[in-house]
Length: 438
Image (cartoon, rainbow, N blue to C red; front, side, top):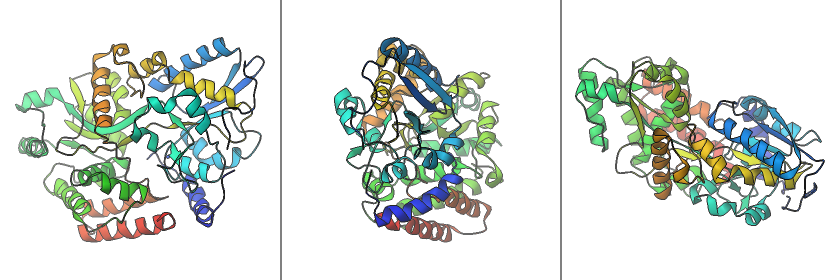
């Protein structure tokens, strides 16, 4: 079990409280217990992907392959995201723990479980199966943690088999009707926003009551940042200047977006679902959000042609990360079987199922992706990986920081506080929340 440092103990108290209100934002070697053949054994598996999702379809196929190849049975329980987030720290410390579980990546979630010894060090399994060779460095960051649970460490505690990123969804029919071209630079992007406003159209679908507005704010900061800014903000590798050029630009520009009519005046009360639906029904021609909407838009945004691209501009940085992780609880009864199942989900044929159903696989053969729209999505993601562009999410560094970002940006866009005050408030909460890690 990982050593409980003073920092970890303080952190545990904070994170348990954070897990109770979690919002989507989340020592064992390969020679663990369980028979090698799997005969007569059962793999107890938990995950929270819907059966019709890209991962749900892929993992259902993986279960069939696993049972055929090992002779073991899979006892699958679909848990909700909230169930796993709220109860993991209690259930995993008992004999009721599963053998393999999907869990949210990041310091306040998988990192917390790693720091308290509730999930296994799987470094030996990673070496045995060669999983590191299939994962780009920025994907590995969220799978490896320090003894205090800070991502980017040296010890493997999980494996992702899909990825995600934030980009821009464009309604191509709306652009054609307005006589506009898709932007390739940030200046062109702003020009498009101005052009739609001039036609009486609010161009950006946005949501200030939940995560989208904060993600746009962080993306704007990334347009002025570099990898050292990301490493300081996310990995505590340097000071974060909350009145510096990156954050000042992001906060000032977000306020300008509202003042200029790029975003609806009532954005502070709008939820993510409402923003997504406004793109689906054609009300808003542009939506800055994540690849997790892609599969839904394929099925529901059928009244017009659309595309999904990386945020325009000179920066190579984009919000995004690995997907959630396969983690093996320390109390798992059949760790070897868990590793075998993880390995099956990394195979090209399983990765192709993810890719052809609107997901973002991490180890697919491009030739296996037969859906044209999905191929474009994966090509964009691979381009971000090649540029070492994944920059994680703004709420990750500190437990509870998600709610702080939502509240402070609501104050900004409603005009109840100015940009400098917003930055100061964000900075105060960030510094307090990360003090134990610096």
